[in-house]
Length: 309
Image (tube, rainbow, N blue to C red):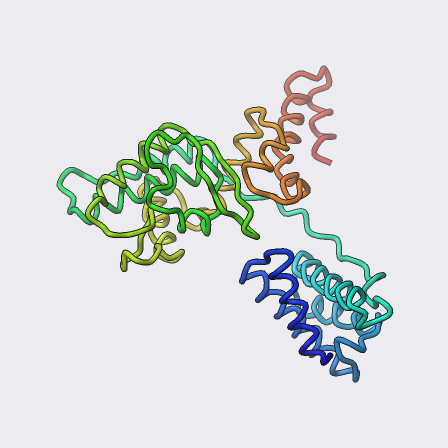
């Protein structure tokens, strides 16, 4: 089996057995091509690679200024690839087995305060004398932001929601997430009402999507939604640079934990396959502990200083 064939069969396995999304497969292919190009400079291929050859590739990635998180993700792909070659009998050893993972940066998610989210929602209005197009745009903004904040949806999940996603008296939303995994998320009454108002306004549109694009047979693009969010942010007095669909998802998770939600429940709501991904939000609990110490410990001043170390 050629090196190219090995990559092809590996990607086919990821698609068939693990239901990897197209974007994931494209990222894996890019990672493998990057590794193959680096190995070629030392006279190796993906099938003949040595551990030292792979270490040189990782060093090249770091020298190029790629973040530790990106390098760790690429290494994960390479490890899976060589486990696949080992399982298929293409190699008798695993050169990636003892490669060290770079320690990922502890970057905390950016999120909005509860009052800032309310300001965004309040800005989703059009004046009485606005055109029909501007009134509809306000309804789209309100429904989209309500759904993102009420359910923690990814933008990719939001934009492909079917028009009938909340037909009737449904209180739960069925979402198909990464890898084709489905989950149910409860919705607030205000989110349901915002969606119903949009559906009523769009009743003449023949679209299968809740958020159709300029061409009703297609879903709204990410770029079109970003423009809507930018405009609403300006109206709400917020810096648009701080806003993104993922910031709203982070806000959803952060505010739930701040109000006492369980981490496992949050994992299910966000659709995380691994709870380790959800644990980044525990910074909220850490901050609450710091505040409790600062407010109630008899040595509040010195103790709060210690908490910041």
